[in-house]
Image (cartoon, rainbow, N blue to C red; front, side, top):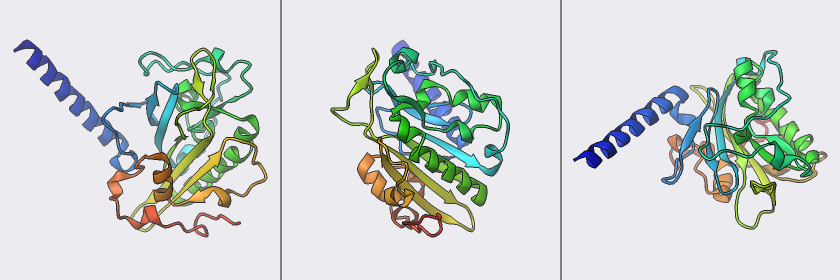
Length: 251
């Protein structure tokens, strides 16, 4: 009877914690959780970590107009994320690699307090990015997302690398170098329901239009295999349509 009781208790605790976490963060912003995945959460974002590729598969968070205003001190250090069993990548993996430690949840989205800022510097929130990409078009997209939050009051964001086979690696931890990075963005309230997604190659592209890399959320789901906003239902037109004028994008 002991093993059965222990397993039952573990299952009960998992369900209870999972339910509390969803209640805390809100169901709408969560991608679909696969059976083999475990969701980890800091105070201001949640993520699924891929121990094969040594980086997060996705990170999800809510971004409001209030969050992008503040004077939190930007960290000069990155930190191993102790939430991840077995550890994350570390400084040595990136040293001399030629790649930036590219934020997935931007530090610029976490300026509202020091805790949020520090959490954005965990290695669970980092992927290898080509410097010109990280400091160029990816940064420009991050700035656009903050403008969306400012204009709309609250948005939901899911972001991450496109992971797959045959990727090159860096460091002793063999951190995969993604060929592409994505963002899925949703606004959903009583008056406005709209969505957009972006998939960008991890390469120089600072002079390219963001419009070129935009697509519907459903298109991005097909490319990544991730159901970004399952609470909407599979037939919701927010995921299948894109209004580039609404999102202020031009060719």
